[in-house]
Image (cartoon, rainbow, N blue to C red; front, side, top):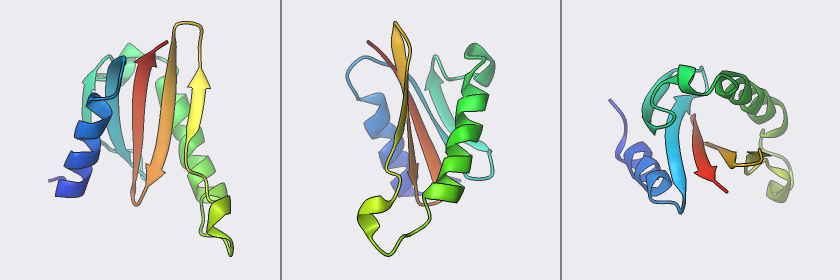
Length: 100
């Protein structure tokens, strides 16, 4: 069962302009929630790779630093017609696909 914070963060993703899909993944890779184009990870063949890369970034670069401003806040991968924004927060990774 997801926490109220995860639910609220997921709802905020789905309300972003031009949202084509969103999902929440645990740092272990378990999909907690998904909708739209990201309802099935098979819908975007590169998405599992993007999430794995984001997980590695979070683990290696996202660790708390002496200077909190150096913490990874998000990763955006842009394509011609859409983009994925990947945001680590607490024990989850939030992904949103937006049309450009």
